[in-house]
Length: 88
Image (cartoon, rainbow, N blue to C red):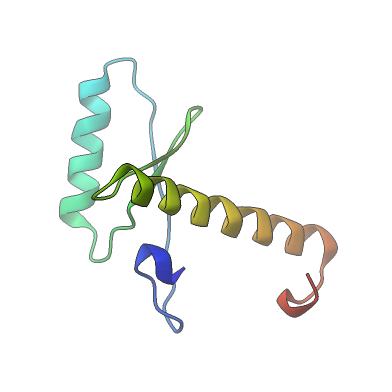
């Protein structure tokens, strides 16, 4: 998670935002999240849409999305198998 600004001893939560038909409402919710979050990740999950990420370059934004996708996949497999992280 270091790639999205989360240190080894830190935890993080991915914001889940509603998927409004009016995109300006998504922008409003995202702005509110970024202003009010002490440690906002550069990725949010938009309900019934998917992950949305950003960065200073397109490559950095893609990297942020790949990191979160990997973490989600890892946690899901860990949940399914019941194995400790070291054995996955």
